[in-house]
Length: 225
Image (tube, rainbow, N blue to C red; front, side):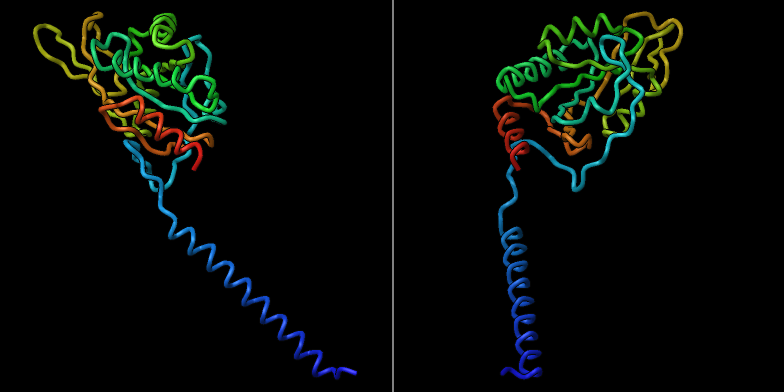
């Protein structure tokens, strides 16, 4: 017959053994994670910690107010520009359209084009513009103040410059174009492509120059990591 003391000792032995096993298991798991190499991206620069997107008071190219659901459940590539852009915007949107075609069938990716020229970029103009590059590209617009708030969140820079009475006038982000600006003025904007993850958080960006194959490889790595 086993004594009470012996039973207690046996119980303590198994308890200590279980603690040791659990500690070793956790140690191996943590060590393996620390030793496993981090993904190496071609061009993506990720933030140390993603930032949840606030509610933006923007509308899409059908004039519909967007909701936070726009960003949920898929990866989004966000590009700021304007439809009258002579070079950068059409070149980059052409690449993003090609990227969507290359990743055809992958419903986990969308491209969002945000116009920073609300005076000229009407919903109809935006719809025709993005549709030329790919029918699934989403275009967004809003007031100058809301666009400036959106751009500031992502760290995108832009302003406008116009000549009035033979003087060059710089119009900062968030300010309406002054009377007399007409339809001929320049918009200066950053060219990064911003990344929003399926949880609706700003995760990082791609820096130019952009290569479609490298974008595809980086996105596939993000989606599986």
